[in-house]
Amino acid sequence: MEHRSYQGPPDLQAMLELLSEGRQAGNGSYYVHRGDLQWWLFYNNDTAEEWKSRVRLWMEHDRLAGWRLLSPFDGHAFDVYAHPSLRGSSQEKEMLAWAVAHMTARDYIQTVWVAEDDDLRIGWLEGNGFTARETHMLLFQRPLSGPLTGPPLPDGFDLRASRGAADSRLRAAASHAAFGSSMDFEPYCQRSLRFMQSPVYVPEHEWFITAPDGQVAAFCCIWTDGLNRAGYFEPVGVHPGFQRRGLGKALLHGGLRRLREEGMTSASVCADNDNPAAIRLYESAGFQKVKRLLTFRKRGEA
Image 1 (cartoon, rainbow, N blue to C red):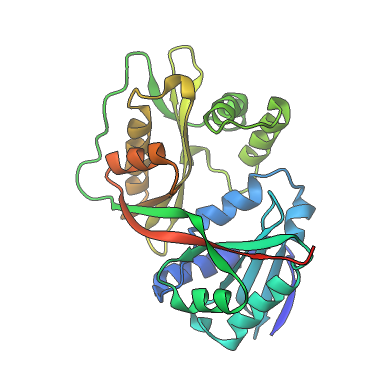
Image 2 (tube, rainbow, N blue to C red; image 1 turned 90 degrees about the vertical axis):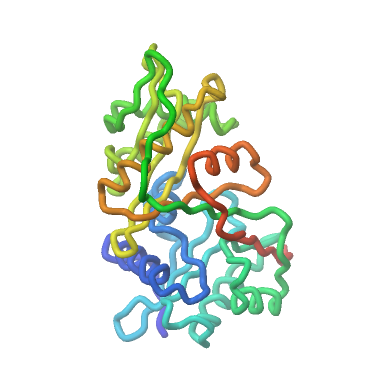
């Protein structure tokens, strides 16, 4: 196999298609939703050249065999996704080994999104010095059949789609507060604007609940996978000044209805295992826990 750097939009499309094909295969490996990759690449502080430098692609007979992505946030995390036909193969192990070898100068390295029942990936990681952490993600899913009617909105509140860049500051204010960001607001706002101007942003796929004074009280992005007819929520947030009013549940039901209108038959969302508020919200909207997604870490050589 040959490996090379990211070269342009056709590579992104191939990476997304590999994820969809992996999810369709259902072979025991966990493949993140296409929306995750688009969110990771375009909602960060990197320039285009910086995020492209974090991607590595392995090619076999002019076909994408797999790819690696380094985390933009702390530089310690990596993800490797191989074509589903290569599960457990020497080629997949070669990709993993290359990724680890090129990160050993850090004080620790880790990989996330390892399904708790993926014996092959867990076996490789444990055999190469990784151990599972206590903190992990929970994957929730629900079908899109049946009624999708959420609680009524309080008087004066409205559910609507994004207007694009015109909503960037409203969106940033809600997100900054909902996630308790320590970043100064202006650079945070610029990051939101860049995302909303990116090629993966679809205004009709970001939903807001607005308060009577116009500010965004709750927000979510929905993502679609046409091959698997599977929708996904990332991110989901409620401004702390508007919590405990049923807005999160109403927002999710609005997103679920939109996903069904676009032909999706199921939806999923992830939450940290130590975030009981998010877990309660998703379960109240009909999502059920499917499995744990583990994080494995090892010491580096820094």
